[in-house]
Image 1 (cartoon, one colour):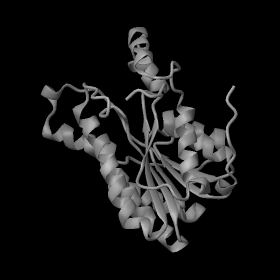
Image 2 (cartoon, rainbow, N blue to C red; image 1 turned 120 degrees about the horizontal axis):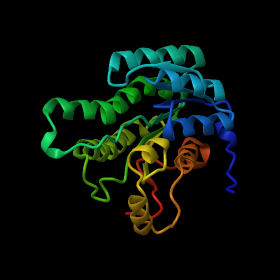
Image 3 (tube, rainbow, N blue to C red; image 1 turned 90 degrees about the horizontal axis):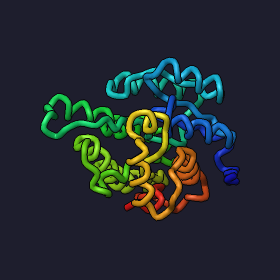
Image 4 (cartoon, rainbow, N blue to C red; image 1 turned 180 degrees about the vertical axis):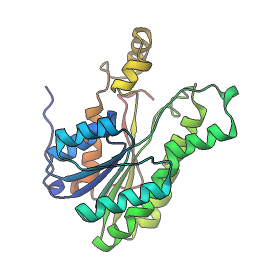
Amino acid sequence: MSQFANYPSLKGKSVLVTGGASGIGRMTVEAFAAQGAHVAFLDRDVENSALVTEATGAPHAICDLRNIPQMQTAIAKLADQMGPFSVLANNAARDDRHNWQDVTPEYWDERMDTNLRHMFFAIQAIAPAMIEMGGGSIINLGSNSWWETVGGFPAYATAKAAVHGLTRTMARDLGQHRIRINTVVPGWIMTDRQKELWATPEGLEAHRKSQCLPDLIDPVYVARMVLFLASDDAAMCTASNFMVEAGSI
């Protein structure tokens, strides 16, 4: 049984998580709530969002993150309710598989909207209040899929590779305001979605062999890295990648 750290600096902090209704996002909401943070989340999944709010007390706003004005309105609504956010976890994404031969310009743009564009506009919406507060922490969720040269989803892999560029450039632009921006890089994380859609016995066995560590990765370990980067313990960490992939690259 793992014994996890408590971060006193997270108690009472206002935190926003995108895609908080399931998977890594839900685990991140639960982890912040357990630290005594005031955490809220965005998602388009009405049913699961209600369940997470019931379980954690975390308020949420239903919105489609591909619709930037809708997202901006939802962020403003939650900030009015909770006060300005000092932590943003840009988590929302979908790793839907697709054949490169079938990708249309419309599908490509939709994948960028789903996996990348909203991250920048969430930062843009939240950073002014962080500047007024004198600092903050932004954690962007990347993926090691492109590090490992995984095929089968070129638009997703491209968007996730671009997350690193977003982190690096915004860390420079906002660093003077003591806003830290980092990328958490998950490997193959055993969310319910992964187990239902793609985690075959053969695939899991092959992946175990590709990792340095033999254990499959639970979403809780990604959430714990997000907590660390949000805390004062990570005060001098910015513009960097923090891998949670069991040594699989």
